[in-house]
Image (cartoon, rainbow, N blue to C red):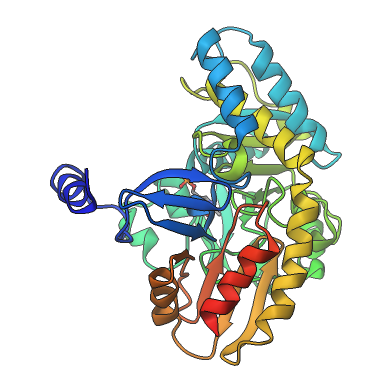
Length: 386
Ligand SMILES: Cc1ncc(COP(=O)(O)O)c(C=O)c1O
């Protein structure tokens, strides 16, 4: 089918979701996708921040294929070697205090379960989240999302959600009390325009949580799985070396196979009893094969080291672009701030066959490339921006 036929068919039979780019992707390899018209695009948005290992990494594809031939699925009603190994590997690379994983299917579901676990653990209901944060579109997660108009889209909202100002500890202190179950945040606010906070802010949050026995949740749906050059934001120098009680994951975790997870410490894990949580598909064998292989590929190809080098290179090269006023973020989660609205730049890049992302800050263009992106590919971006 050609592009027009595909477009017409989708528009006829699919409910509206995002504003789409005018391309139909057919194949992908590394940082590149090929369209129905046989055109190659450089994907610096990594398939919507998902394809950290690059498109269709051969090791991940092989693992999925091999698993599919054995058994596609059985739920957590049975034990499974591939699940056991994926959980061990994930917990093994997580910050020291993390001891267990709960698998689900998406980012919003990971956040819903994280908040539920925090409520179980504290027997309280209030959840503090932040201005500019995005946590997903199911009922509890959208109610925790104070970015833009999302809470209105999610009406009626789940009660008990209050909003503090990102980066402002005083605003958190005013809200945190013995009724608060959790403080949840994106440690780098991606959709808001790749907004950062200082290590002191994270240390302060940890202190507030310790003081009131509040569960600290890092939504690492975007920052997790090597994106910043660290496996996780939690526990890293970026967080002032403090650790969250729960880390939520999705996006990069399965290289494109839908999977989410909550990583939890002992204090949280020990209150969760059989039947408190459940999901039919979470922890299915196909997804678990993808998780294990994703982590192995990132390790084997030294992608975390690569993305750290790429960040330095990109920041240096962006100095050549007059209109760039600042570069936000870390590793492969970068927000390029321009002096003016960046929508025309996003469009011009697309015309040059380079995919990037916008954000809710009209001046900030977002890059979330595969972690295996090469310097030559960054050169193509710079050439198109000059
Ligand atoms: C930080 C963050 N949390 C949660 C989500 C929701 O994830 P999902 O779309 O997989 O439900 C997203 C999605 O963009 C996200 O960026």
